Image 1 (cartoon, one colour):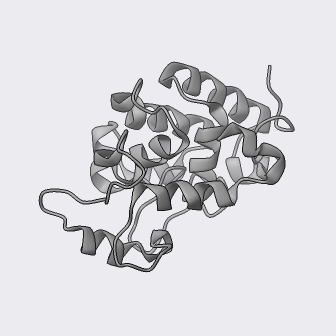
Image 2 (tube, rainbow, N blue to C red; image 1 turned 180 degrees about the vertical axis):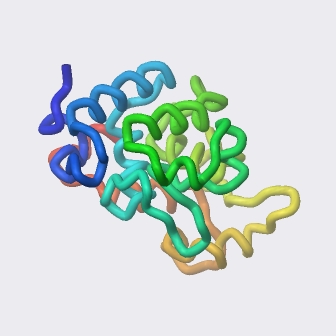
Length: 179
């Protein structure tokens, strides 16, 4: 059994924020990570970034995205719930919906950036580091404009390497080996 002291960002987990026990949360992260074929620390990193370091299942951004992986309306619906219902859940219960949201990508999330991209921009999963994030109806320039945090080289677009670098920069030195 892995404890909060052994998992990435375990020191940030607070029962009053999670609305459940820290160990119960860590155990569920371990379980769904195993089922999704991903490193648990990678999933912790994604949730740490998406919740601005809080791990709050009720955190909601200015666009209405909510929870541990910032569910939008469509992703919540695909997982069989709503953003309002997600906001009311404790973190362990919400992890079941995190699992359902990521399940379509199980077996394809082979790198730390792939796990994040499954949440942020699934079309980029498995793409090379130099690939520019875009889609048929979403030009690369719009992706860059809407997500300036990731545009490290300030060229107006986001490449996979920039996602990876942002993720790595959040990892404390003693955990860098996980990447």
